[in-house]
Length: 287
Image 1 (cartoon, rainbow, N blue to C red):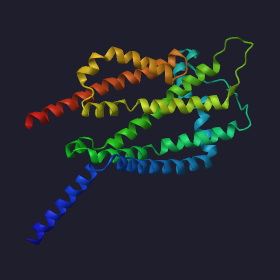
Image 2 (image 1 turned 90 degrees about the vertical axis):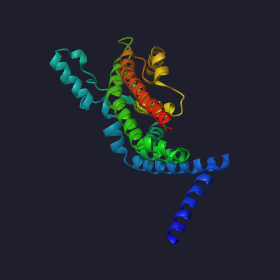
Image 3 (image 1 turned 180 degrees about the horizontal axis):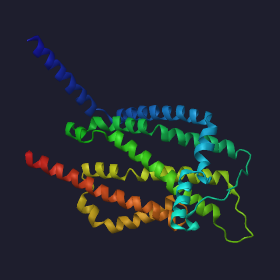
Image 4 (image 1 turned 45 degrees about the horizontal axis):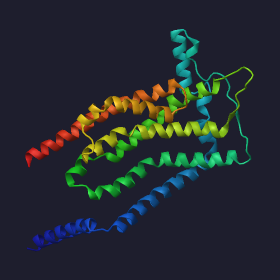
């Protein structure tokens, strides 16, 4: 009898916890969200301080490296140029001068870059915090289907950042850094402009690569379906091309390089949406 009583008490406590969470007011939800944001911001702040201290590694090895001929992508393009027999494929072979115009520019860029580095490094924990906020509102089956959401979100984001950093950034630097309207005009790139290009492209690529995750959750709540995504496929391609133009420098080559993975991710999103809809229909039939 005592064991049965304990089980009933545990069940009652669990139900009570679920009921309490369901009965939380709007302000209570905001308070809970605030603490998730505070914890995320705290980790970002700590990692940003570490990145600030590691100035030599962050700038010399990461930020400034894509403009060097020794950068991995630049070396691969050089090898490809030798195989094909076309020097036009070689990128970032000339020295690119960076200048700082304002007194506080380098210091402010140091702070901004450290914060962005902290955000990228803390992204798995940030995704975990927001997932912890959303998770209690889901049903048990939804939690099971969404298992590994933090892992896959983090992996896709990091892959997107690496894609932007290793492919789009070097191509953009080569095109914009070597472009000239006249031989009388010498390119002397501002450090702020260079760093903004590297960081914005890398972050934007990371966000874009989360498209399959967005497709999954929007399909779960019934906002989109595979039929809807197929119907508006052409419209979506146009939007993706416009998005590529926004997140990349104004050259058609970089836009195409971003647009291709967007199209691929959109098609993956259709497959994910189809899987979600099939599971929901199967559950409806079993009820």
